[in-house]
Length: 84
Image (cartoon, rainbow, N blue to C red; front, side, top):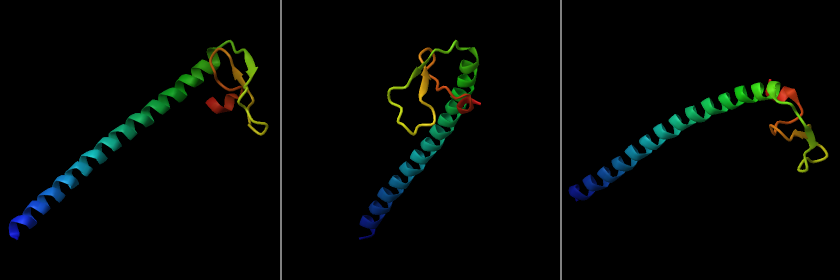
């Protein structure tokens, strides 16, 4: 009986250890995602300033969307406040 309980506890401990490792990985990836999102925002600001925009109506825009135009060169929306 004691042997069965010990094996059971080993299995539980192994699962707990896996969960700890998975949570560490999730946290590392979250930091990486946040860093990449920040870099994308920074790049979009520079793209907005440097692109020779050619605006066209966004075919997927709905009637109540805040911005209905998109640049055919850089694919940014015609609303600078999105990128500042």
